[in-house]
Image 1: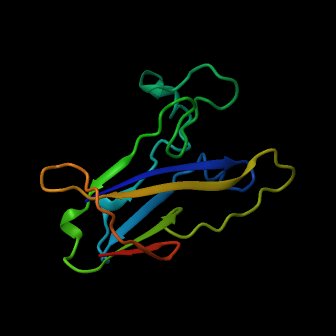
Image 2 (image 1 turned 135 degrees about the horizontal axis):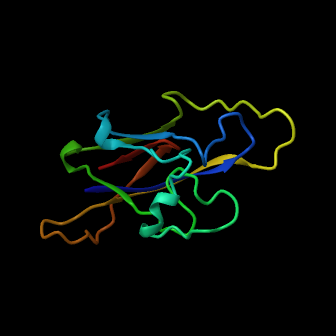
Length: 159
């Protein structure tokens, strides 16, 4: 079973931390209460002055006006956003399993402080798309549906 996620931050210039596009935030998944570094997605180039500029050879479209060179949370202008994937099979139990998710800024929940004065920016948004792919013994994706129960916006239960 593979957990795959696309996670990007957007918005800037509305709060003091300039989130969520140009700040580092971490995304933590846990399976049956077990988490850790292998289940944490980071955006280490977010906020770096040349974070996207150094990725031109990997698909960033250069020489756009404005902020194109600056590192962003999970994406750069013109560049494909790649899936972050983790094999989670060894964390699963034979019966019911639970996946939880939380996003943190500086190790805690984000509580934005509005910027003083006029803002020409956009409010912070984090876009998350997460998928579980179940494979058969021969390595092909399983075709039968799996019952998933979304208990709340951050907790998924499945057999």
